[in-house]
Image 1 (tube, rainbow, N blue to C red):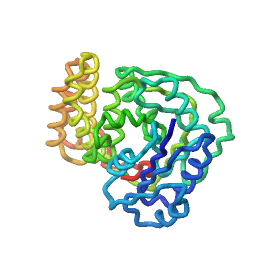
Image 2 (image 1 turned 60 degrees about the vertical axis):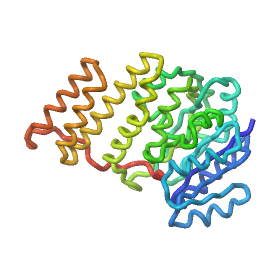
Image 3 (image 1 turned 180 degrees about the vertical axis):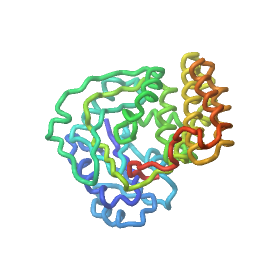
Image 4 (image 1 turned 180 degrees about the horizontal axis):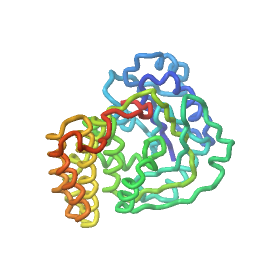
Length: 323
């Protein structure tokens, strides 16, 4: 079995060395490490050049993380593709653990592990007992994965704790990470996996997920807009799904996401546009509770500003990520 470590990067000079040190500290080394620099303007490339030939360094004009991941996935020669963001850190046994899951669950389409949060730009001490437990293995059928994903999205928040067989990536065509929704392209990919088969989840925390407070503000409006667009792109596939429960679950997810988009539009002073989203949310689900939520929000778009609730802000502090 061969494993490819795939890292998209953009302006990661403060973190990329720690990330790569973790890759090279694996008990089972990846067979190749492919890095795509997405047009960095700091000294990321000069830092990365020191690791050649231990890594294969690729460069592109700034085109977004989705495009970078697509190129890396296409070029990868491994049987198992281990994605890693440019600021996260793997436990030394991450690849060994994911390879074991791959061997034991050959019909699975994706492999996740638990993670621990790392705040700031420091390192992570794996000797503090965080990952000492063996962890439990859960094989999650597609319907339950969809339900879990939307109840606790942080559990599956990053490609850094997800490995995907190359054979599965091939089934998804030349752009498994849809460029139109770059920035939430992992959200798009995880929903396509729901169409293909079961997911394996290992509860042992084997990834340090870096959170840099104040390092980057994420445009929440843009993110929820792209999430809605991702579901629009996926809708035809889910509508054709043979399991009526999956079709129903997708409609419920779509209705909820429309409402979230509408709330942010209200927070940015766009009630007319929000009204459209709340109306559309009514068309996705026949669940009485969902319909009541959408109708209540629709009513609020006609209420004077002084009586409005506090809506989500357009901006939020986010994790530092290439986008």
